[in-house]
Length: 306
Image 1 (spheres, rainbow, N blue to C red):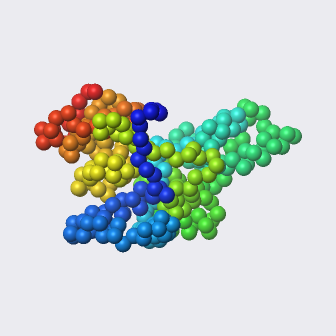
Image 2 (cartoon, one colour):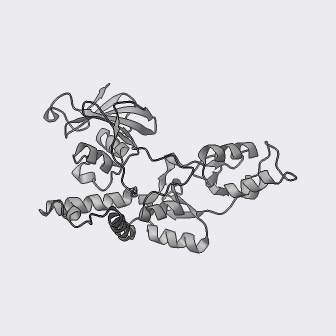
Image 3 (cartoon, rainbow, N blue to C red):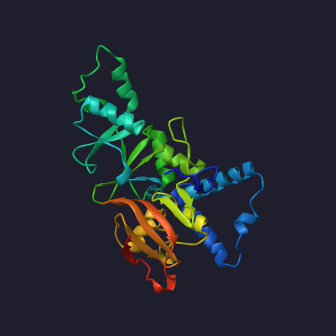
């Protein structure tokens, strides 16, 4: 929500993938634990262009240790189309999502049957003589193959497989055959070079906004490292540093479940995390403010109604 008194935390030249962020967060904390705080910063060049080049080299090295789970879009954020959808519904879905590809499924995402590419839809729209009626079901003849991979697969191996198969979308399948997430070639490339924005992407706006009184409002999908930088505090519990990548992940970890709108979760570092927006499956937006009482008087994960 725009406001005259808000200020945004600065964005870097490129947004790192969550797996790469976790890798470097652990490295920095390991260095600090050995008594060499600031070592990484001290060895970085002053020229911003050179800094970006060094970042890319670092990310390329870190990419070799990433797994598909580190770069995938989680199931809850997948935009897909049901196999029996009408031509009109498919066009509307592409128009709203602004994606080039979408998975096709039968009844639930746990039964994927392939991928639909927007180019195939455009070809039908452009052919007046063969353009389907709005109610026609066309996905059975436009369906393309998708890749199906486990979350534990190395991201570098998936990139190679996508290049050789020329299939640029993979569905991530769990041990029971259900759909766990989705990965595109763009996701894999962004893990190396940072976020790639095209002409359809909104201008980058900070997902963490500073408010008066030491209050911050955060998109729950924002990297936890960004919130830690804004607060100048480590927030992830020591035993969960490598498992928590986002603000939502921190809130759920402290609460032990998905808290709902209005709930307040106490953080032992002296902050209250209020859930501003949520649905039954996930936290969407969080307000972080200094705790009303000393942190020592609160147990981690204490919850109260707002």
